[in-house]
Length: 421
Image 1: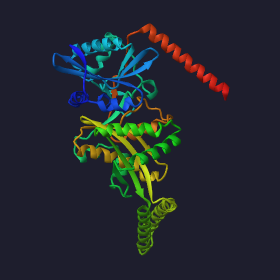
Image 2 (image 1 turned 90 degrees about the vertical axis):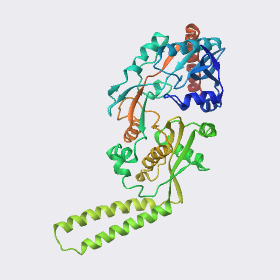
Image 3 (image 1 turned 135 degrees about the vertical axis):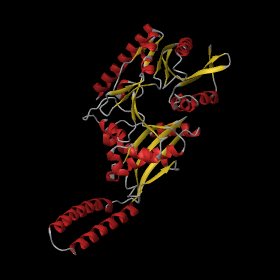
Image 4 (image 1 turned 30 degrees about the vertical axis):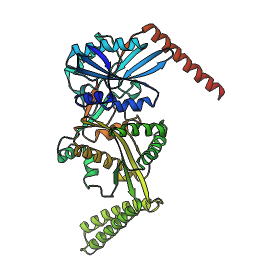
């Protein structure tokens, strides 16, 4: 067998037909990564003229050496251990030849399903056994990490099966989500896909989210590159949820009028405990409507962007990658309307799974990530655990030396910046 450089079409055609297909192992992801400073290697493992596996490698220069990363890959039949072993051998020779310090992999292999409290409830023994297999073949296992910061890509995710009927998808939602969505978008939240100004709308709510959560946000050019490179090969969408405030004001005018009409009708009834209790309930309802109506009446802009998501799609899957929400009109639950719309849109376009792209593998209610975990949990998908990361180190001494030097340099730069301040 031998490893060869392959074209975009050869790689994408092979990945698309694999049950482990992933957008991060496509030529489009190579285009995204190229604009972020990586050197791209598109490789195919051949037995004579038969293509048996592919690997997209991202190379980064470190002094006179390089590191290699195979995000969510490589792609082949993971039930064939001899084939995996051959791929690892060929990749080792290839990376070593290109002055590689190490190769990092984190394949799209699910080893377990978790319950709502992050306890393993079902395990695919076949994939779980691959942990020891990779270690036996030179891989340094990063371990059963649980937080985002411990690995290059999330080790947990929620995946919703959208091959089911719309009724089954809805019934699979958490009670909270069904309650929010049962009235079928009563506030007329508008959801659009790939509008001309979608990227600007998206970045607007991303900035609001980063300020609210005190999180770092990538510059606009990052998201522009991410979306455009994937969209060039028809592998990305931007969904935007917005509201027309004039329509919303009219909805609340009608709500108030309806409550007042109910109160008027109840007042015509004979006096008694039932009438008093009903009027008390209606008074509370009216006060709630008035409170929300006041917030709506104070809106100045005619259109407000409430929520937005960039998705990637390839093979049989859709991934919700980057998303943000406005601080305004949170009671409209536009993010729930948006995610549910994506589920149904993915179903309508023939996809099998929607991957909510990442969760932490522990429940910590004090963490700022907990809200993201809870939101994704409420869409009723499988809570999946990936196999994790493996580093295949080819030059141990130089890798250790360069890692130490880089850590020392970062520490010195930090101390100098503190001194200047």
